[in-house]
Image (tube, rainbow, N blue to C red):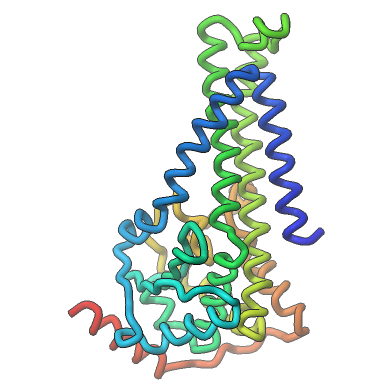
Length: 308
């Protein structure tokens, strides 16, 4: 199943889930109210998320004069992808990472951390930038907002059901002459949000795989991104990022790691799986990544200039 088809399937499953849970726990009126309330909340997030997240991470916009190598790489890849030139930012953190945001390609932003520029070589940086531009091209910000809206509706319905159970039973008792009973409503109000979250995270992981694949096409070769992911995974563990759980899904590698059951709720696929898929495209094998001291020197010099 392709990533595009998987995304459509998961969003369709979420829609069915909302209708079922809405009628079961909150009734039709409650379902409609919850959906529109969640949509309003996520619309605000979708429209203003770029400004909020850039301010949260103290990102600084750079120009062609301030960061010529970085800016020209974004410009070249944007042309190849058929996208308008996004704004380019650097985040003052040593943990290597990157993200893209913006409500559409005309208002897109690509941001990388200072640490990413210090540890990656030129081809690896291009691989990361191509991945982020793939998110812009594939409208992943919009798709993520739709998934979040649906999951938010389920969570609101679950809260409504809990309060309804405490103060007189579920809406179904009046509308359909039946109901789950107090215990049934309480169990469903716990299970429903967890199931919705699992589906939302599955959508996010599917879009990460798609961005890897699309980004490899933009860059011209998957090895740059594969090598970058190896380094990012290794360095992120040693240099943990100061990141908010609410924005963790935006980054190319998850700044918040988890093991075992927590992987079910991860917004990112396992790095090993992503790297294997990329290298299977060309049959390339793992090789020691080339060093790039000149790039590190330029990155440090660039940050010194930006900090003045």
